[in-house]
Structure formats: structure tokens, C-alpha cells
Image (cartoon, rainbow over all chains, first blue to last red; front, side, top):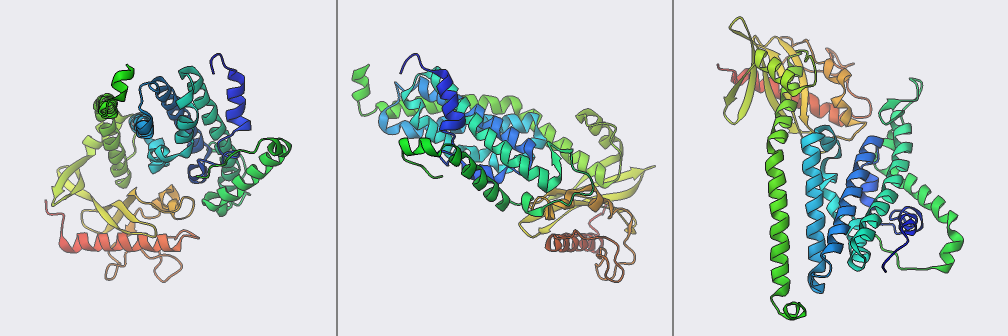
Length: 210
Length: 204
């Protein structure tokens, strides 16, 4: 457990065990906030922050936490960091806070956080847990950005709010609506899975669904 | 250490301590950011009221917005709502009042500005709504809101002030693909103006 291959943590979080397309958790927010790239980026950063510090805290106090109340403690810790993010956005990025609306608060219910706290931080030392949080958050953020890149490009003709397609471009309304995220995410999961198909036969683990 | 962990009250003790620590952290954070958040919300509302009155804001700085706002706009509480009015040479020239109602996906609230003689619609700004982004949500776009500036209210029969083209007497374009939201917005505005004028809520 000690020592630890940090490179592996990042490789797992971003690719091998990517929360979205490998573990298929945290889907709800992927569908909800990916209509603009800026929203996705801020959402991703918020999740990275929350997940990393939640894992760090859970890991630090894991030795004192009685086994049968550990989940309550985890939820408590996650909520605290989510509220911190929410307050921070409201105070210093009111525009972004408005755009993300209730989804910042809903990070609490994002399965990735609970999953990583319970599955990783509970059994690993603080530094490793912190890095695992960043890695999982990055994995989540990359998928969000990939989905929102396609949605914003076709739905608004822009990237990060900057017009890239000219006036001739007719916006695809479907891309702005949540259902389009289903299709795009499906294609991304398909693509990613086909890339790792051989490996999959070797290691068959339990899959959680959020 | 292993002793106390076996006690039945240990989990309770841990939960109480952890909860207390985190609650204090949040309370402290809330306390130091309270003013900033309140200022942000106030600035946002001021900016919207200025937009309703079609007054240009020199910059996005909260101080500038507050200065311009205080120069032009006065506030009055009527019942449980706030009405804003603009004065020129000691005379009231325009009112901005809240209107609300149900749109397609949820409640919608806005401020409508009309001239003091009730003859002209000066502007419109949405405070809160939950319409579909990219469809009904386009009511937030400038081209839609700008259409309402300068509408003649004297021609409106029985509260039909806003009429979508190409109907007879139409004066505003609806949003293509968002008919229900457009209609809801029209009805909310028409009813709001009608109520305001007929009830004379503007008693100052």
C-alpha cells in the first residue's frame, strides 16, 4: 500500500478506470451541464476540487472513523466541500453560479465522489487518495469537455463562447437539449470500450451504475 | 486508544466532533462571504432595472452600477413588492414593476418598465425563469427583449398590448420553436401591465 506508483493512479483515473466510460458512474451531471464548454470546465474543476479534498479528508480520519458510521462521515465531508464550492462560485463567479444552477449542489450526489471515498480513500494513505481524487476528477472532466465540445460546436457554432462557425451555420437544436448528450456519451463509451476490448476479457470486475 | 473505540458511545462522539468542526468551517466561510454575495445579487438586480429603463451602464464594476442606479432610480415598497421609478426634474417619468406567472417549464418573473403616463412600454428584463436553453431560454437574448422597447400602450385593447406578428396589429416577433414560452411571456406581460395600469399601483 505504501510507496505507490503515482503514475498508475493517474492512468487508472483518466483511462483504465475512467469513472464515466469504464465505471459508468456520475452520468447525470454529464448529461446536464455539457451544453457549453465553459460550464463543463467549471463543473469539472469543481468536481476535481471536491473529490480530491474529500478523499484527502476521508483518508486522514479513516483510522478514527468507526466502520459502521463511515458512510455518514463521507457524505458529511463531501457536502462540506460542495458547499464551499457553491459559496465560492456565488461570491466570486456569480455568472457561473447562475449558469450551473442546482448542479453544483448536486455534486454531492455524484456517484464518483462516494465511490472513490469508499473504494479508495478508506483504504489508502492521504497523499495517494488526494492524487486519486485529482485523477478521477480529470477523467470526469475530459469526458465532459469532449461531450460539450461536440454539443457547443453543433448547437451554438462556438467553442468556449467564441464563434467558430460562420453565419451560414444552422444551429442544431437537438445538441442544446439534454438528449443529445445521451447519443454523444454513448458513442464515446463505445469508442473507448472498443479501444480496450481485449483487456476487458482479462479483468472482469463489478460495474456500478449511477 | 483501542479501548475507547470499543465503547458504545465512540461513534456518537466521533460524529459530534466531526460535525461540529465542519459546521464551524462552513459557518465561518458563510460569514466572510455573506456581504460579497449580497452585493452581487444587488448589483445584478440594479443592472437589470437599469436595463429596463434603457440607461447605459459605463462598466460592469459594482460601484459604477450603484452610482448610476442611485442617480436615476428611486425605490418604493408597495405591499410586498418593490417598484422602481425614474425621476426627471422632480417628476416621475417612468415605472418599473415586477410581473410574474407560469411559463412552459416553471414560474417566470420579470420587470417591466412603462412611462409614467402609461403610454409607452420602455423595456423588459427577465429576473428568473427555467425555460429550455437554446429554445425558450432565448427570451434572454437582446434581440428579443429589445423589441419591446417603445411599444405603444395606448392602442392596446383590453390588455392586448403585446401581439405577435403576423397577427393583425402585431408588434413583436415571437421565438421560432418556442411558441409556448413566447405565448406565456406575452400573457404575463400583458396581464402585468393591465393590472398595473388599472389598479393604479403607482400611487406615489
